[in-house]
Amino acid sequence: MTATRPAAPRLIVMGVSGVGKSTVASALAAALGVGFLDADDLHTAEAVQKMAAGDALTDADRLPWLTACGVALAAVPGGAVLACSALARRYRALLRDGAPTARFVELAADPDVVMARATAREGHFMPPALVASQFATWEPLGADEPGVSVDAHRRVDEIVADVLSRL
Image 1 (spheres, one colour):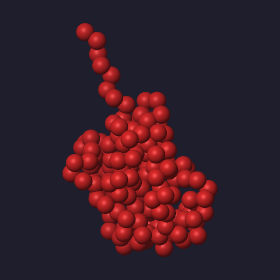
Image 2 (cartoon, rainbow, N blue to C red):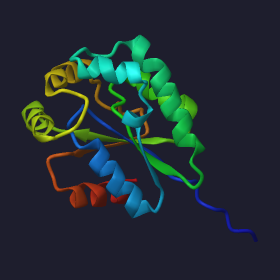
Image 3 (cartoon, one colour):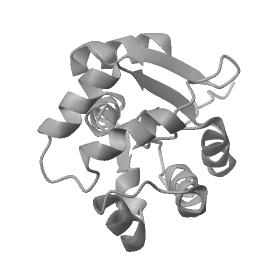
Image 4 (cartoon, rainbow, N blue to C red):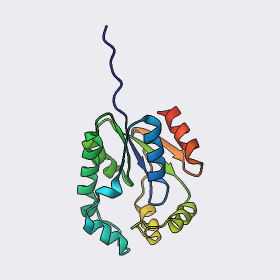
């Protein structure tokens, strides 16, 4: 009898800017022993400049980027964890077009907490002024979408333990 290998884990840690996606995704990747990808690194220079100027991205800006993110996630041998806003259901569908086995980890937090985190971080191109536009675009993970929603108000190690126990 031949042992079957479990599928390579492909997770997308999602949420609005400032919620802690990169921190949690990096910790999850380390816990799983897989690669870490940050969707911020896949933005075009034009998109980064637009956001840095305080302008929210449009679907025309986001769709090619999301397609590239899904393809990048699927391409990592052995699995990976991607930190990506994935704000709307249609965006998550695009990500899964590229990485069909991906599962989502939604980081849920109060807008005031996210705004405080976004204001406190240094060196990020996304200004805190765009957090409200992120919440306006946000569609919570649907019951029919593969993944879990977790409380992002907790410590990173607690979030990782919760995710690992639920996935």
